[in-house]
Image (cartoon, rainbow, N blue to C red; front, side):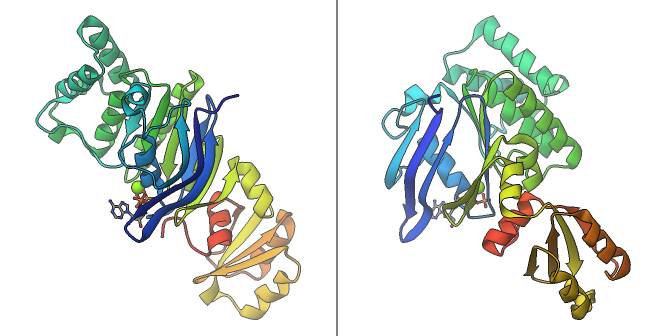
Amino acid sequence: MTPVLEARDVVKRYGDAVAVAGVSFEVRPGECYGLLGPNGAGKTTLFKLVTAFARRDGGALTVFGLDPAATPSALKARLGVVGQEDDLDADLDVVSNLRVHGGFFGLGGPALEARIDRLLGFLELGERRHAPIMALSGGMKRRLAIVRALLNAPELLLLDEPTTGLDPQIRHAIWNALRALKAEGLTLLLTTHYMEEAAQLADRVGILERGRLIAEGAPEALVREHLPRFVLELPRSRQPDDAWRELARDVRLTEEHGDRVYLFHDDEGPLRRFQAERAPGGAQLRLASLEDVFLKLTGRSLDA
Ligand SMILES: Nc1ncnc2c1ncn2[C@@H]1O[C@H](COP(=O)(O)OP(=O)(O)OP(=O)(O)O)[C@@H](O)[C@H]1O
Ligand SMILES: [Mg+2]
């Protein structure tokens, strides 16, 4: 199947700083691909290359087979973009923001109005259609940005940190909407530094660090590939070293980061016994996650 997006050794520099240092990945039709990475990893820069807001310095990039650097307007009509920063027009109300944006795509009249109504309903903003932008909460602005990005019926929706800073309820509402769009066949490329978001939405994730893709795969497969199934996380300062070192002889992998110790094991049993008998309060037994993969590969936490 021809990929919707194909990046090969893509490079972007700002002066001497390398923001994207040779990234290769592809997004397949109908999938949700998640670019997961901490602040400064290069996520937004990659988006800017895809949407032709920045020029790449090396490598090859195609979206629907077109190079964004060469054919931006032919591409823009097929993309929906939800940027990281709020860029709604504060002088206009909700519906006027949408009408103006629709106008950029040559949309108007009853067809546009029907589409606005449907999408405002879909993202539960129907009662806000005449609200000034200033009167919207952060979560409403985010949902309005998604409505706006969907107006031109895009074939690929790009979302740069769609739920950063939002409360859990709104985050779940946005996840549900994105899942529904995906079920209709829309291809999604999103960035996030919430590993839970990536695990909830993405068919595949690419873990980006300092401009490089350091791991890629289906979330569960990535965790399985890099780590045993269970982890017991202990606060080191409250843990007698001898006790966990004794257990560590029996576990497959021990990681120490900051003031935490992570003991990994394929079976829950030994970890549970250790937790009951030896571990201090505050020890947490859980399934290994993408966050642990990132920690193992980089020694850093995803949200640091
Ligand atoms: N216009 C610019 N001029 C100079 N440096 C830039 C510019 N834009 C980004 N950078 C640098 O490129 C690197 C990648 O930035 P980018 O915004 O792509 O990261 P990000 O993964 O989106 O981070 P965040 O999670 O904070 O949004 C950073 O070191 C950043 O300082
Ligand atoms: Mg960013």
